Length: 313
Image 1: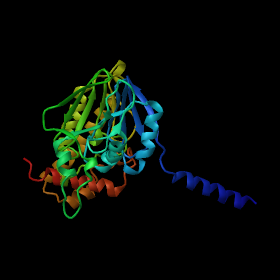
Image 2 (image 1 turned 90 degrees about the vertical axis):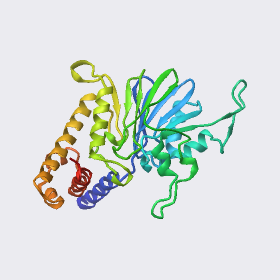
Image 3 (image 1 turned 60 degrees about the vertical axis):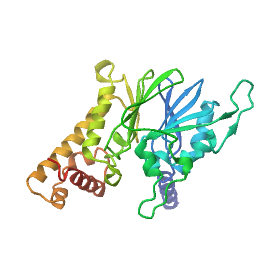
Image 4 (image 1 turned 30 degrees about the horizontal axis):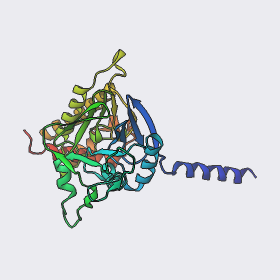
């Protein structure tokens, strides 16, 4: 009888280990919340004027995310801000457009004194719209409901909503060429997109205009915005693209790690080493275990950084 019991227990453990991630909403500070388990982290700002979200996660999780938001607020969805063009950040744009209403999908409001209709605005850097709306290498453009309805170029996009000032700060040539940081000034929270994460190395996308130096510039920009509280802990809170809620100290460690990896690869390139030789030297080895990164993912980062640095002075 003991053997069957062990088999059953093992089966339960395996099943639990493969269960899909659950949507979880965590308070950060001020009127800011973080939604995890939906692909990329989603940042919520809630208030009397409505709901603002930074990124929308994977398309398959959209209904569950909207249901969780509705538990916290019945106010209309007003703004979506996209930090990147990648689908784990923008996959839910269409569902949010349908839920909030757009210029082509209108939600009628019958409440006395309210406007006759609601619509949601999707904000993003101009490069996000350019890449979403283009057909590249036979890959079709994204549906128009997913596109940003209001774009900006290099200057910060500023917004005042729910009694709080927001800055949307373009960070060029980082993960892609359309990345943005979002700074909630009153709540003192920075939403970083994938420029910073706690679950692995940054997914630099060279084909979409990304680069290692842009990532490092972005990490330094986050540090310019953040101020710690006592003993270098707390203070400004940081919501990463993936992973747990952080503060400035976490960003410093990540920035230093990426700087060291870049410098190791650059020094090897200066010695005339090929990319395969640099991979074999394992320049990321002392950090791989910290993030539980596979050898294949580590090699991918090395190759990406190598290509990003090639041709630089």
